[in-house]
Length: 126
Image 1: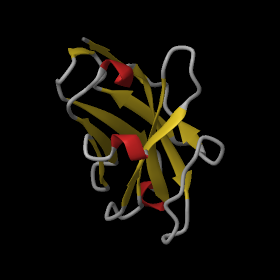
Image 2: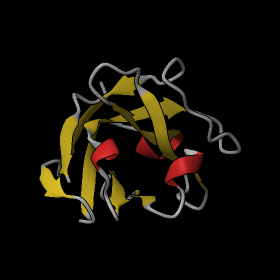
Image 3: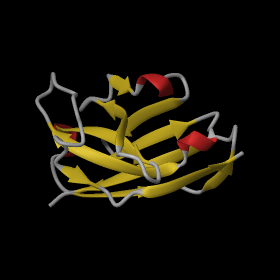
Image 4: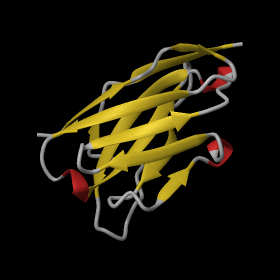
């Protein structure tokens, strides 16, 4: 059974940086594309970023490119989301997700994800 546990969320000021972590428990970590999603109060959950099984390829929500960086450590079974220049509109509950994919496929979506964490709260004050 796969379990995902996010950590690192907290309250920060606008302009600050923050790194979120997601710990994967279970087997076959390297078979999973990993992603981050977020859900702001009163809004739908949205895609933030994804990283391929190898970690060599990444994908981002267009508006977050340049500020957010996703990475993974396959030895430690961890995935990270480095966030910089945070804005109040980044305030949300951030979720880690995993989708088992073939090596050439790094797509992940809310509908296609196989596993989810419980989320970690990020609050950005102006």
